[in-house]
Length: 202
Image 1 (tube, helix red, strand yellow):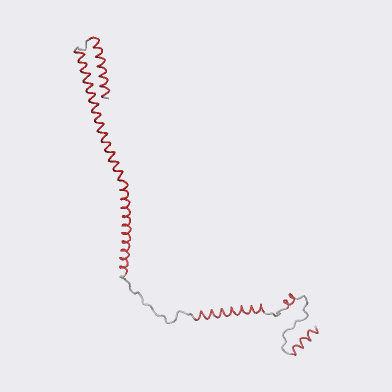
Image 2 (cartoon, rainbow, N blue to C red):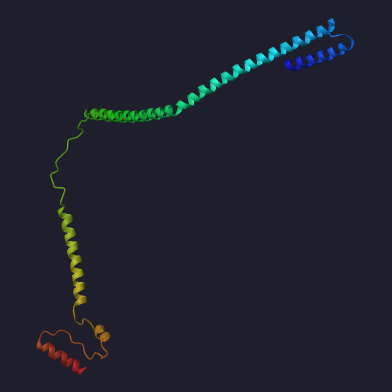
């Protein structure tokens, strides 16, 4: 903004000088005064531009220095990350070892404390006068029950497997010939004769 104002003033003075030259000669005091003002403003503007350039060069140098310093920091980051990973790994190992040793210490303290027992006998044990096992009554009852059950099963099996005719229905169901007479087991000769005589009369 300052440079723009100075340029405007220089242009205004140059226009004023042209107007003066229409009336006065270049050697006139008014024309020389205007030239002096133009020269002063031009010198001041040049000095300002020079100072601005120097400031910009200084800032540029500072920025380059900062960029270089930052770049140097980035160059060392991979090594620092590697060292950090190693330190983290060692820390985890040490932490696990500490936890393991601490647990073992607590277990040892608990085991040592468990050796000190605070027990007392409330009632003494009594030896029974009779044996608890085997129970003869139960064994005898079960043996009798199993014997009866086994006998019944055996009789039933023998009855199923024997080849004898037990009743009239069995004969009629297995034969087409009608039954003429039923004869029981006769032990004596007289019973046999009497039985057959009765059957003959019928």
